[in-house]
Image (cartoon, rainbow, N blue to C red; front, side):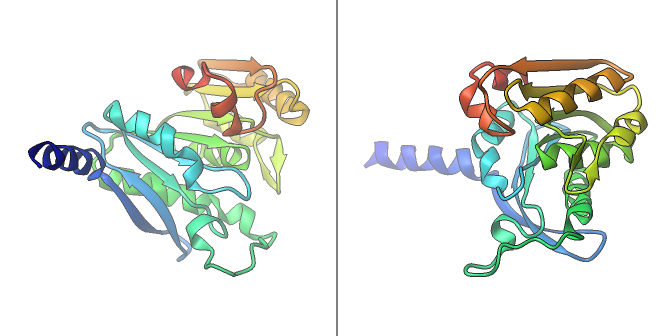
Length: 220
C-alpha cells in the first residue's frame, strides 16, 4: 500500500502542472489551450496544422516542460476542443487570417505567467501564423517553422520574414513535400538574422516529422 501511495503521489506531482485553459483573444473569441507550467521564465507557444489540434504537441510539450519551460499548445478557432461534438468542422474563409489572434492570446498567457522569453513553434499553417505574429511582436525571441508555405489559406509569409528582422529562425522541411520545401528555401534565403534550414527526406509534413525523423526533437 505504501508503494502504491508513493507511486500515485509521484504521478500526481508530475502532471499537476498541466491544465486546460481558455484564452480570450483580442477579437473576443474564446479558444482552448493546453498549458503546462514551467520552472523558469522561458515559454513556448505551439501551433498545430490545419484540421489538427493541440494534441499533436502533447509529447513534445512534455519534453519542453521537463526542461523547465512553460508551454501553451493552442487549439486554433474551429479546431480541436473549440468544436462541439457533432458540430460542423467547416472553416469559414475569413477565419484563417483571424487565427493569428489565437496565437497572440497564447503569447499573452505565457507573459501573464511571468515568461520574459517567448518562442513560437508552428507547423504548416501554424508555422505561417507563428511567423506572422512574431513579425509584429519584437519581443518574440525566435521561431521554429515546420513545413511553412509562402501562402496557406491566405496566410502569407514573404513580408512577414522581412519584418521579422534579425532574430533567429529555424525552418524544417521534407524534400518530397515539394511546396513546403520550395517555400522553406525561399524563406531561408530571405532571413536576415541567424537562420538554419534543415531538409529531411521522407519525413512528411508538419508535426508528422516529429514521429518520422528521430533527430528532429533534439534539433528543436
